[in-house]
Image 1 (cartoon, rainbow, N blue to C red):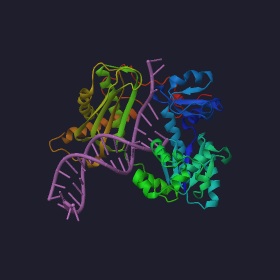
Image 2: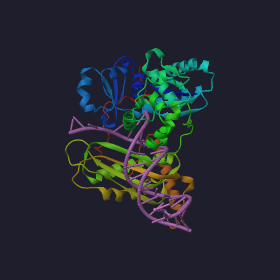
Image 3: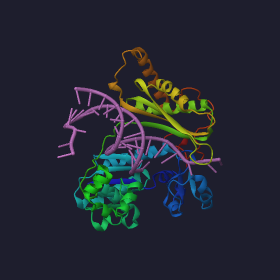
Image 4: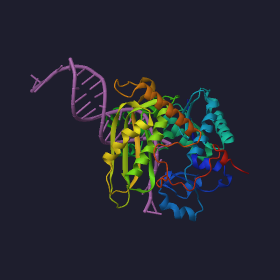
Length: 413
DNA sequence: TCTGGGGTCCTAGGACCC
DNA sequence: TCTGGGGTCCTAGGACCC
């Protein structure tokens, strides 16, 4: 059996843990730059605040209704996630942390004990971390997802549900787009083919699915039928691509400012690369103007290969700068830039270039990076280039404290 | 009527997820 | 004024090899 545990309105719930006065009130959390709504408490959902709604369009309505609005505080959410996952790990030796607020567990209990187990998981996570979760149990991951959705949408379930078999009665309750792995595009095409519910997808013609949609959807159909095709991925695989990109808080026209942004993002991306002991063979740089409005639009990206794969921030920056120069056009108001590291491989398997960077030099680089990572981990930010006034950095004026990760922010009562 | 039969690697694009 | 930031996998097509 697979259990899917999903935190309810996770970011909003994190804010509530340390501010109980928010209980019962409408709470929303905004994306980076306070751009759009990415988490809503049930009260906020009831007011009709949509997921992904631009904040500037909703602002007045939110204020009028006394909604509590927060900038995103990933330091807090990551740490709360770690606590939730640590708690869940005590309930099964096999756990897959699927996202910041979801995990699959494999349960090998007798079926008659599953319901009690689910209730206990939910109660324990709530008591130990303050985060409310729902638990859905079934024989495949796709069915566990639906089971969880059922628990979440039906108050009568008490937040847990065990679905022993994929019955017509159960699957007919869900639109086909509610099935994990079926998004908007496939939903439309399936609807056009007369498939509107999860049950109809369960009954769909196998060869038609394979021919029209491919093997990915076919696996989902099998999962709906109770044939497990998606296994529990207990160990997180190394990233095959690492992105770091941010929207600016204001327009940027000057290439020097873009250069500094690219240096910053590369520092972040390379730090992630080193944390999984990998090297990257290619680096990509992209810049964009605003998508909306009537200002002239431009976006472009350029990618380049490293002479030899590296995790050295300085080397990556040196390779990336000419790429930025190549795509930069004067006269545009840029709103976002980013970098993308690809062709990632384990650092232990580097194929050195006979005429490349001498070993002694690369050893020095390695030491420098290790020292930098250590300083940054301890909260001192060490930068490449000009770390001075950066007017374009993220806007997040409504952020709560880092209650669990910074002594200065410890809650006072 | 009929045009060989195996492969690999890389990239772009399109889906999907949170 | 103002619209996030990460990821994964699969497929088709083009280039190459013998």
